[in-house]
Image (cartoon, rainbow, N blue to C red; front, top):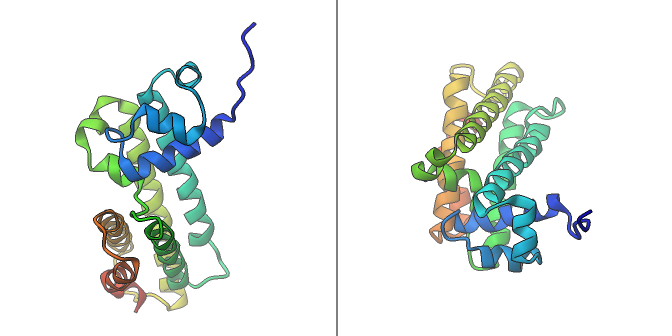
Length: 200
C-alpha cells in the first residue's frame, strides 16, 4: 500500500492556478509549481500525472471558483441589477490593486487560456471548460441585467445578451491591460467608461 499524500490536492490546485493565471501555461515551469506548492516534482506528478493534467484540473477549479463567487453577487436579490454589476467590477479591480502592489497584474487563467488557441486545441477538456464557463458567466450577467431593467437601474433598451458580452469583454480587456502594466486606478476609470451604457 502506497504512502498517503502529505498535501491537500485542492490547495495545490489553487496555488498552481495562482501561478498559471499570471504566467500562463508555457511560462509556468514545473520548478515554479514545485516551489510555490511546496511539493516535490515526483509527488506532484504522482498526483497529477503531468504539468498539462495539473493545468487542466487547476483551470476547471479556477473557473468554477470565480464563477461561483460572481454568482453570489449577480443573483443577490437584495441588490439592484446595476449594483450587482458594479460589485463584480469592483472585485476585479480590488484584485488588480492587490497584485499591483506585488509588481504585476492579477492575470486570469481563463483569459490566458482563451488567448492561446494552441493550448485550447491541445485537449478537448480545455475547450469544454472555457465554453462552459463563458456560457454560465454570460447567463449570470444577463440575469443581473434583466433584474436591473425590472428595478429601473439599467436602461430598458439594452439587449441583455449584448450587455453581458460587453461586460465580459471589458473585464477580460482589463485583465490583459493589467498584465501590460496599466495601473489599477486607470483600469478602473477605463472599465467604468466601457460599461457606462449599462451602469449610468
